[in-house]
Length: 404
Image (cartoon, rainbow, N blue to C red):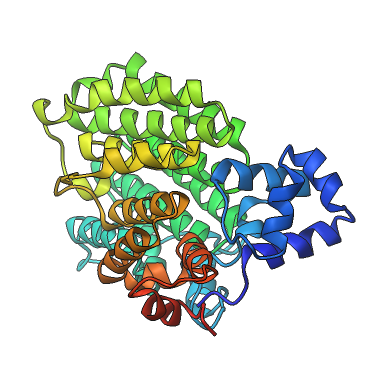
């Protein structure tokens, strides 16, 4: 469970930077009153643009300001044996032995199924099981890249690209963004030797997300827009898979724009995405949806809710979320974010009961993710600081260790 909070971390980082509250306010363009409220723990959360601005003013990554990420275990350990094994798989020893061709019992189809299952577990926040199987998956994929036939080698490089992309995502969730970028760069290299033209832009979107986590918002938006333009220029938006990858990149660019306080640009990008999302169901469908970017009318709506919360428009966020029916291809992680954003919107409006109701739903859907998610913990801390506690808040506070 979370043992620290935003206010304590902010104060510690500010003092390490030898900054007064007024100096940090000037550097970050965040009001000194907001900084005081956070440090005095009268507020336990803030909008993401504010958090990015504070991180930039402090000269640290956003992840450093937010504290332990969701994948860190309840012991607070994020460098245990399983993660060490993942790191070694991503970065094998220099001048080590070359991979050997796969043995007679190897099945590329089975490997692809294992990687797809790994992505399903990741989206369900089952990080420990994913880390358990990742080293062997990466090793098997590397073996497949030296198979006897060209077609098998190309498919092996595609599998290696997806396995390394998954390792990059897990590394981000562990707060290891530098390792994530190494894994993703190697994934892009593998993708370039595969026959799948969509794999490199999909991995580029993961790089953009990692840049967001590091506070490199301009870089994140640039790479997402560049990759999205490449997909259109090559005519890949004529298939469902190609349009999904383009849409995910476009929404990623919108998120970076919003966190940079460029709401006009974010709105323009989301309008483009929403106009195209309806075409996905009408286009020729591709392969395993677990291996392709998430993009549909449902995901666009979820992203619009998220951006409305970031804009400071909680009424609009709740109006967008009301009565939303999510399609079957929406992963649990996206449903998790939707419930978090609904809870945050209710909190911003002073509707503690509505926030608790959303958080109770989140606890039923994704208890592990919620227990270590910084935003969920921050929302409950904000609610716990209120003089009157709505029904159900005590149970949530105890679950997250906030009431201790």
